[in-house]
Image 1: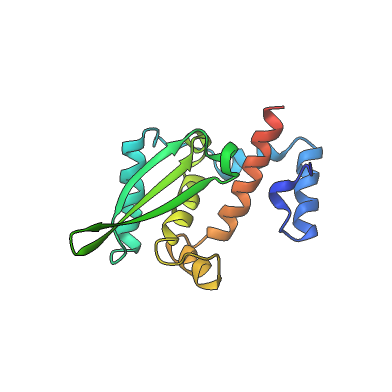
Image 2: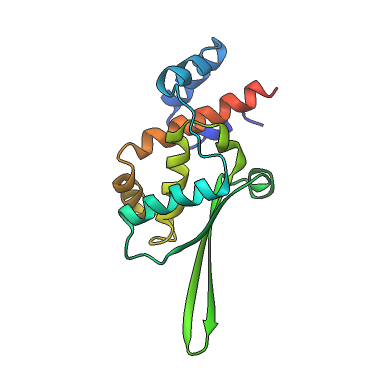
Length: 165
């Protein structure tokens, strides 16, 4: 497997910079310097409140968030860090939609900025189902530094893989 598999879509220059940090053993120092604090959003209830507050701030007219929880199996089962599901059910003569978010449990130990990036990404799927230009514009609206956070989250995941052996 490619040691920089989290960065395969990035330009060669960024991959080389990341490889240099890895080779010198400085990737962890780089991330600790940029993101020194961990968050305290450890339980499912706190995650729901966090995600719902972001949804209310940026997506008031979107369907309500029904559930948000950490999922320990998410990364290993579907190679995803977060997942948005939408179920539509018939209630009498009306259709009701239920939206839920699942976030990989490893983000319990991540800096808050990385958790925010994943939650923003999944919330953007409430309005845009595909990863297109409108989707990324919405992500950038909810988190102006979204693209940098996505890169740094990928670097953090790489660092986690290296640290775990």
